[in-house]
Image (tube, rainbow, N blue to C red; front, side, top):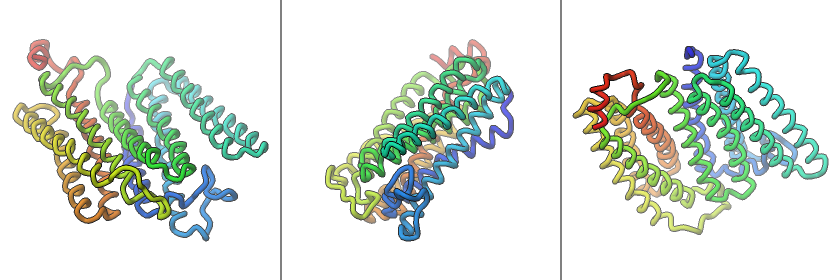
Length: 359
């Protein structure tokens, strides 16, 4: 399968869009615009777009919804480019049929539910039909297209995730910005950025069996760091979701103690910093293929820690909180690249070199 320059461009655009929408989503919360459009999928009961009476908050919230559409289009383009590269129109046509059929079925479902006076239920049913169509299309294409299934799986995951994220975002609005839904919404966006980054790495890697390109102890240490990173992100999301930036002036968080959570969030963060120092130092000392990305991750992590300390001592100014959110996505994405760089195509080294690396 030949990776076209067009696919490479759109893969990068998809990744950048995944990061940018974290910034726009953060802007919605940090400006108190989470309920700027208090309906979903419409902005008001009678309008798809914000009305002049809704002011700047409506524009900010609707702008993020519009960004979701762009992210979805880019994900769809990447998927169809992968399908075309893998099997030409024989692979594209079934996916297109599932897409068109899903849209028609979803529109019909919404129309019927709306006619029965269940517009809210119609939105949920419409979303369920669309997601089912995407899932069916994914299963069919992965089962029938036998070239670069790794790229196909990642592309389908991003598309399905973007569509599911729209539903989660709508649920956040309809539940009055429930902090757990809002937190999950951010964590899912961060995960999608990581998947998009993984797609770029795999796109530029030869297919086939892979073998470790680093010592076994390094693999174990890096995977342990992955768990610490996951804990850091988890407590960070929990802290932010229960902090003062709820997304709306009338929504007050009174559950968890945000200041205590901030301290708990910092503990795995500092442990991760120590692990990142060891991993980067070992990568350079042993001249491992991970050294560039280990350094990148360490630099992003240092920036993340500095911003985190700064925002905590400055009473959480919105701009710093937003930067912290975006840096978290970039840090996690760079870590995914590092982990994927710990393996290489099996033919890249001699048997003796493979045995030495695995020892």
